[in-house]
Length: 162
Image (tube, rainbow, N blue to C red; front, side):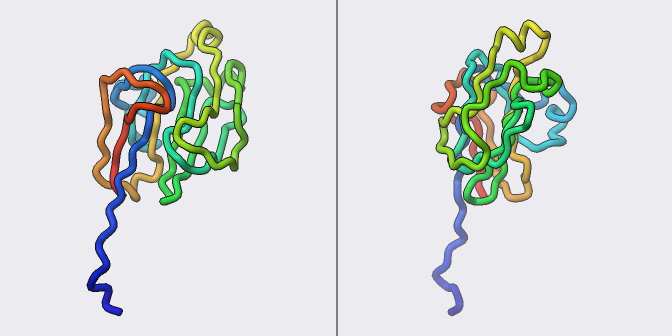
């Protein structure tokens, strides 16, 4: 009736590395949109792997036609964007293989995109991969694990509360 016993529910969310590599601060990403957090806040990974996985449980809500980026919506409404490489949209999908369809419920670690590292690098593109929360208005207390070697689907790279 008066909600005397209702507690403020603070939920801690952990995001795993979507690709194996070394984490870097967004400010070091060689693209103004990401470096200045214009598309959201988070972390970036300088990858050594070639499989990009879901960083958390949720719904794969969008895979760009060019397969260089995808979005996941968590059950709490937080929206994630994983953007594989810098300016890789201009490859028009070459070097990227989509492994599952948008609309699929995924678990953290579910493979989503396979990349042809050599092809993309030989075309002169950076594979630095920003991992962003795009609706930061829902998020409190964002922490990132910068400067760490991480394994896709295993190591935590971001934690935050909502």
